[in-house]
Length: 492
Image: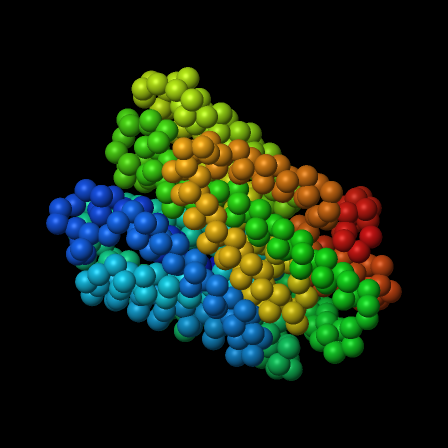
C-alpha cells in the first residue's frame, strides 16, 4: 500500500466513524427494547407502552427527513469536510438527553436529534468518500460506510445487554466525542476545492492523497476540466442533459427505496422480535442479535476486496437474487408457522439460518454497493443537492418501512410472512433493474461515468477518455467493457 492510498484510508476511516455513530443509534433500540421489557423498575417511568416504543424507534427516521436537503446544500457551500464536523455534536447531544431523560418524551426528542445527525451522515459521508478516492479503490473505500455502520450496530449489540441503561448511554456518547476531535484533521476533497477555484490547494490535497508513482498532473487536468464543464452545464443546461439528469435522479430513488424495502434495516431494528416470532430460542434474543451483528460485519469484507475487481454490477445482481431467495424461504417458513403447519420450536433453526444468510448476502452487495452507485450517478456540481434529495426520499421510505414492518408482524391477517414476501419482490426488482439499466462503473473516474450517461448529448469525449483513467491514471478502458456499456447507459 502506497503512502497516498494509506492517507485515503485514514481519511476515509476517520470520516466513517460518523457512520459508526449512526450504527450505534440504529443498534441501540434492540437491547433497549429488551431492557424495557424485562427490567423492573423500568429505566424510565412511567414504563412506556409498545406503541410508544414503536414511535420512539421510528422518530429517528422522522428526524432524518429534515437534514438531507440542507446537508446537500451545505456540502456545496461550506464544503464536504466542514459539513462532516457538524455530525459529532448532534449525536453527542442526543446521548446526553437520553442519559438525563426522565420520561419517554425526552427519548422522542433525542431520537429526532439522532435522525438529524443520520441525515447529515447519509448525505455527506458517501460524497466525501467518493471524492477523495482514487478510481481504482473507490469501491473498496466506499465500502467503509457499510462496514462502520455494522461496527456501530455490533458495538451497541455487544455492550447494551451487559451494562445498565445509564452506563450503556455513556458508552454510546464516547464515540461521537472521539469523532468530533478526529474529523477536524481530515482534508477537504479536491473536487470541492476546484469548484471554489482553489486550484493550488486542490493540487496539494490530491498530491497527499495519491501515491508517489501516480501522475497527478494528468488526473488534475482531467478533474479540473470535468468540474468546469459540469459547472458550465449547470449554468446553461440543454434539454437532453436535463432529461438525462432526471432519469439519473429517478434511478437513484429507485435503488435507495428498494434497498430500504428489502427489509434489512427493519430486520436489524426488530431482530429480537423476528427471532422470537420464528421460534428460534436456542440463544437469548440479545445473543441472537450479537451474532447477527457479527455476520453483517464479517460479510462486508469480501465485498471490499471484490467490488473493484469483479465490478459493482455482478456483485449487486448476485446479492439481490440470493437475498430474494432467502426472503422467499423465510416468508414460507413464517407462513407455515402462522397457519400452524409447523408447531413448537423444532424448526426454529430455519429462521436463524435464513435471516443470517440474508444479512450476509445483503452486506456484500445490496448494502454497500447501492450508496456507491448513487454517489457516482451525479455530476460534481449537483452531487450535494441531488444526494440530499435522494436521502430525503429514502428516509421517508425507511420511516414508513419501520412502521409497516411492525404493523405487518402484528396483523393477524398478514403476519411476519408478509414482510418477507414483500422484501423478496423488492430484491428481485433490484436485480432486474440492474441488469437492464445500469452500466458497469468499476475503475472509472466521475468524468467518465458522466460521459457514459450523457453520451448521446454531443458531449466531447476526447479530453477525458484519452486521459486513460479507466483503472487509474495512465490506463485505458477495455474495448469490450465499453462495448458492453453502449447498450446499458441511461442516455442510450
